[in-house]
Image 1 (tube, helix red, strand yellow):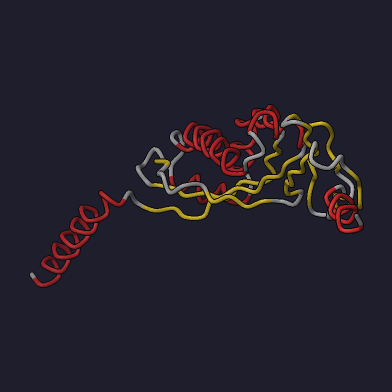
Image 2 (cartoon, helix red, strand yellow):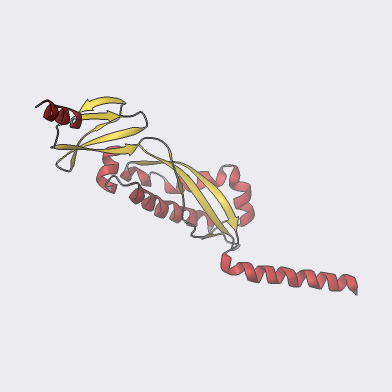
Length: 185
């Protein structure tokens, strides 16, 4: 009897840490969200608990290329956070990977729209915040429908497309050989 009471008692306690949300589900539907740290209770065997991170999350966008108007590629990363766990659970099924997939699409499209009309020099000079501000403005409040807040956008790498690198290097070598031939003559 004591053992049964311990099992029932321990399965009814929900501990929520500072850096997480606890979603209390009853028969699969979110009954309520616990966002403050502490101990709460749930109905054992009827309610279940899902945990979502409350902290700021880093997501490296996939290495798909965003080509500038002068044919350079750019790889980016973003910082994001769950700001409405109920909406997040309803729209993305409480899945971080689903959220990252949606963010990937939203940020990639916005970045593609902004970067495709920009030269590499403008992108480099815009790294002090102008480029990120333009991309964030283009995204707008699109992520609110998923319970997500996009906090920051950063350019990680600016490079030539991998299929063009060999041709560019060959052209550079050819130009250097022409210059050296001029000096030799």
